[in-house]
Length: 302
Ligand code: GLN
Image (cartoon, rainbow, N blue to C red):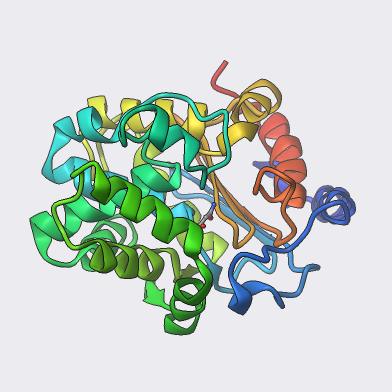
C-alpha cells in the first residue's frame, strides 16, 4: 500500500485515467446525469486490515446506478440463498439493457447484473420485504453503517421519465408471468435503487464483506460470497467482463454514473469514479486507473 500513498504514483494514475476518459462519453440515458463534470476522478482503496488510501474526488457523492445491483442481489441472497435459480448466472455478452437476452430464454434473465435480472431481484425484494430500496439500504448499512445511502429522487424521476427500455424489459418479464409485484412498482423501486448516491470511500468500505475470507463481516456466508464474486467477474461489467478479467483479474461491477467497484478476495476493495463511459457502459478512465492500481498491488485473483 506504500506505493499507493506516493503523490507521484497517484498523479500518474490520475493523468492516465483522465487521458482514457477523453475517449468516453458521459451517460445520456438519464438526463439528470448528462451534465456531470466529466473531469471528476476519485479513488478509494480499502483493505480488510483497516487501511484506506484515497485521492481525487473520493469524498464526492455520485449516482451509484448499477453498482446498486450488487447490493440488492446480496440483500436477496441473504433472505433466499437459492435465488440463483430465478436470476441466473450466465455471462453477459450483450448490452446490459438488451431485450434479446430475455426473449431468447422465455423471459429468464441471464444474470442479476443485466437489467432484466436486476428487475427480477427488485421484484423479489418487493415481494419479500414490501420495500426493495429499504432492503438494499439495510444491506448497505450492515456493511457500512456510517454512510447516508441517500436516494436522489431527481435522478430516479429523470430516469423514470425516459427509460422506455427498462419499462419494456419490465413488461417483458411480466408477460412471462415472472414478476410477483406490479410491474410499475418494480420499475419505480429499481429507478430509486439506482439513484442511491455514495462516494468512493463509502462504496469501497461497503464492498469489503465480499473480499472477506474469514467471515469477520457476517454479511453473507462464504458460499454466497464465492457465487457473487464469480458472477461479478463474469458479468459485472457486461460485455466488457472478458477484458476486465483478462487485463485486471478482479470481480468488478460498473455503473453508468461512472463508478467501478472491484473486490480483491482476501485483500480489500477498490472504488474508482470517472463519469465518461466506453461503448459498453463502463467508465473509461476508471478501467485505466483500476488496471494500474490492481497491478501495483498485485491483487489479481489469478
Ligand atoms: N439505471 C441504469 C439503467 O437501468 C443503470 C445501468 C447501469 O448503471 N449500467 O439503465
